[in-house]
Image (tube, rainbow, N blue to C red; front, top):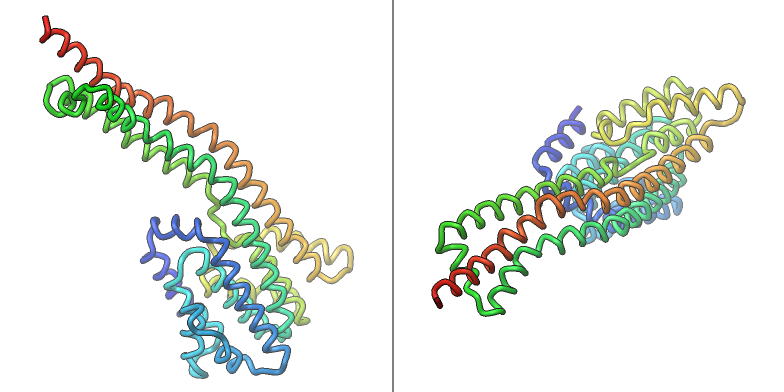
Length: 327
């Protein structure tokens, strides 16, 4: 319960803005955690004890590494990882919580830690590749949304270049103030609409297939399936992965297939986890393609009318005013 409470508190403190920023940095964060996990696997394979292995890692690379290394033997390593991860960003927090759950499951199931960590590092690298592909797919529509939002400002500057006092018209006349208020309202609506569309296009699960990976670790230690399921459920719950991992039905389906076919479940579980990651990558690419089309809605309904109100209308008012005053 201590681990779950610490992670939920870290999540609540982070807020939505930090989650959006962390998603943009998901690939490098996951890659950095994967490198740390790989180093741990090499140290453990060489005969270094789990507690001492964290002492040899570079503390400057990660605050989580420093916190776990400083925790010493007074707290279980899995709990130390989860507690330290509470202050990390969304993607990094998910990766460290996944490591805490994997460490907990492997320790309880008696699975060798070095091979377990190697598999987990490979899983994190696959997730990092998927997040990088997602970021690339989203970059074009996001950049387009930012670019077209500048159109009203371009219209105002264009009027000034032509020699008309569009700023004075907007702030110094009744029709200009009406255009200014309506244009700004449309711009704010467009920005909120764009932000909502982009947020919906981003993946909400940063670690797809995690429960399947944890189950593969549990059964590779030779535990009975019922005990393995209970161990994974407990680790997922206590490490704060319940909302982001999912996969309960997928695990049940793979275990049922393993029983019917009479084959080991570990490889089936890892294969299904990789399939979930590929599916998540394909879904993200599809959402990015749809996003490019949906962004045309705020462009046509908000930004272009705002351009007319803030850029074209003041120019016309200035032309009419100057013409009338010259008569």
